[in-house]
Amino acid sequence: MLAKPIYEVVPYVYFFLGVSCITLAKDSVPTLIGIILFLMGANVWRMRSEARRTDHSSQRIKQTKSHYYYEFKPFILFISAFTLIQWTQNEIISIISVLLCIASLVILIMRVLNRHSLSLLH
Image 1: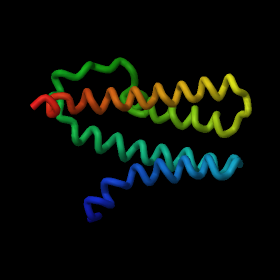
Image 2: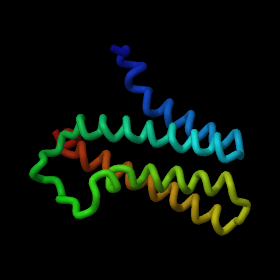
Image 3: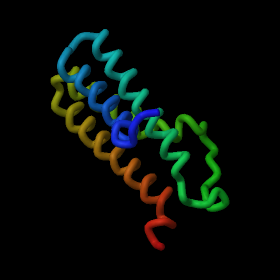
Image 4: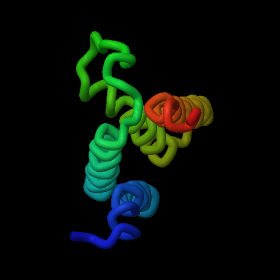
């Protein structure tokens, strides 16, 4: 069993390592490793978020899309946009990628607030 401070940091270490691999080496193998590391962190974050939800299951909106697509969408948007920023020199693509990064962060913030809204009100 990991100590709580180490346990809580694990997904963020994966995120940092993934983004670092993409940023530091502009080659396809380190980029692929970075994407895999980032998505591993996303999976750990997703599992913890599901386990720690405080909203009641009857209040949740029934999803018509795939559950995993819904859960990983902001992470996929972010890492795709970040990779495009690193790999392209086109200003328009970079601007669109930055907007996608911001959109993915907004989605994550909304989910965190929604999943823990009842505990914040009490």
